[in-house]
Image 1 (cartoon, rainbow, N blue to C red):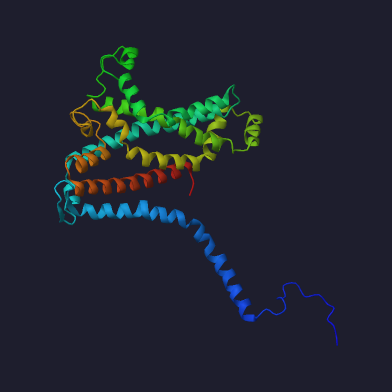
Image 2 (image 1 turned 180 degrees about the vertical axis):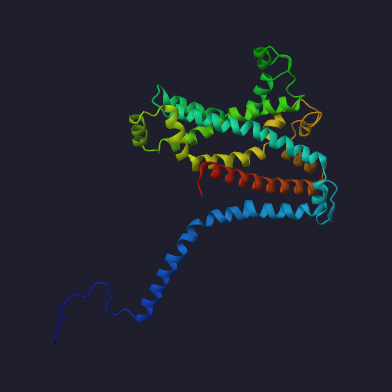
Length: 321
């Protein structure tokens, strides 16, 4: 009898294993390699389908009906709600208010956040405490913020009028109400954007600043020629997120007009009524859920258009492709 004293080669199957079982095991390994990544990310898509895609599709279905909960009406109208929406002066008035408040609040907010982040990026005493303080407005109750700011902008006893020696009725005028609501929004979200910019600034190599300082570049020139260009992806992110949040503005204007007869009217002349307030008033106030769903879809499309425009503008301004 001859004994095989040579060890088995690397990768050789164990003695007695059938070729069929080896083939099954190899196929399972290939399937695992191919489908495991999709299984790992599947919870996100399941949640999105359940809480994102389905409500969006169901809202569109409701918008094709004359739909009322109190009346129980369920009548198919097709695109009638959208045809009415296109000629609805109140809706376009709300669009102008929303875009106006968004422009007045978002542009100064992002610029101020950029400046604040640049200041916090330097060596300061109590830097950690200052950074924590930037988050404080974000964790403060929106209702409490609105109550405080409503008192600050009060016509008769407000601190803002007292500081400027004016007698402005901040809720009566369209422009004044936009400024008051924008101040509320900026106070709440400037610190959030500043911390995002600060995190991106700290990832910039310090060697770039040291080389620029050796070449005689001032801090202002370093900021505009090193910091800002390298922050373009982060700026683009904050612009898109601010666009989405700004066009969905709801809580601040509603609480700002809490003293009016109907909070969803946005003042006697609808001077600060946003799209979301108009949608809420039609759906829940007038029991016109079909039309309210059409307004919601119009807002969805408006957000997509503005996000794409801002995305293209920031990329073109930054010189990226």
